[in-house]
Length: 389
Ligand code: RFL
Ligand code: PHB
Image (cartoon, rainbow, N blue to C red; front, side):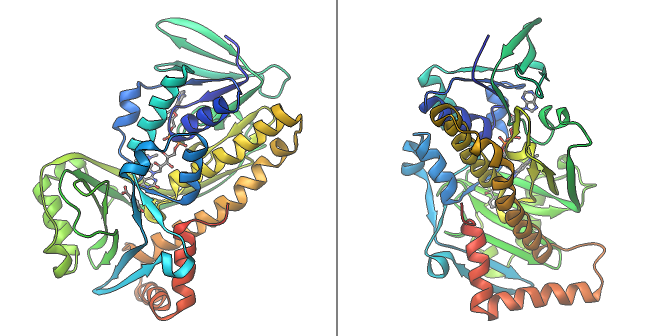
């Protein structure tokens, strides 16, 4: 098989890139290790910045988003009993859209099927070859047979545990990492959300987040130690713990119900540089991870993809390599801004086991600056609604 761009991974990065390129007449094939159902079963992000909505618009995939996406003009922060609403709309004139990653992924999968572009699911042992030569190719196994996909370029959209990043020689890659000493236990349930906006809270028992997917589906998270097992969290235990961390007036508005999904995700900040090595380009979680506190993971993936689509369009339509050459630096400028914001939100709103009395006072001062300074609130709103693209 031969194509122009071989895309590794059918998560949101790979599917969005594939759709935009196909619309521009650039042939591409996606190789995905899992089944489509497995990819859709992963419950992840829920908040879209305008850059992500722009990306989906460019891909022509906004029908359901327009009908079902919920515009949010602000969110509530609660810090040890004090609450504060950040008004994104008033502060920076922009808002965000609440629409789940599962829905984004499903919309992109359906659109890809409609245009008849090739996605190979359950592609095993994907390996990248000659990425530093003139004729790169990818091999994979499917139904016991080995296949070869020749291409001009490879887009590594295969997430943090993928094969693309490790293909780059170790002496070329520089990585930066911060691992946090806790995870988030998430619960999805078909119950109405407790508030029309998201609530990010810190109590003396740890962080909690009240999020949503629709007016009838809620997503809640609790900070838990990394030693916790999801099997030890009955629904009842989860709801009790959540309510015990919330302000009593908010807790009174929580509707409980049976969980559709429960899982624990560790928190990590990670960046690898550069994002391009010869014919290989990394995008999304393959190149960087943020802790979910700033709601940036999916949105960064979308901005990488838009820059990469620009670069390939420039190459194939204008015969220019400028976009390709500038890709890594262009992405990383935006990524480091989002890394800073996610790290700041995580540090301000979680309970750190190693914190001493000084650290606790600094956390409190951080929150006070936010609620007492118009500039503090504006900075948060600007970052949350999305840094310039
Ligand atoms: P994905 O979604 O991980 O997709 C990568 C795809 O590549 C496939 N793959 C391979 N395919 C072929 N061969 C291989 N060797 C392969 N190795 C991997 C995988 O099966 C997968 O289908 O990365 P992508 O597309 O870059 O998208 C990024 C987003 O998924 C991610 O940034 C966010 O979901 C991050 N994230 C969250 N972000 C938020 O903004 N809010 C959240 O609440 C939130 N929760 C999360 C998250 C990420 C999590 N991960 C990665 C463990 C919760 C979790 C559990
Ligand atoms: C979610 O709804 O899953 C969600 C929302 C906001 C975040 C993280 C996760 O910051």
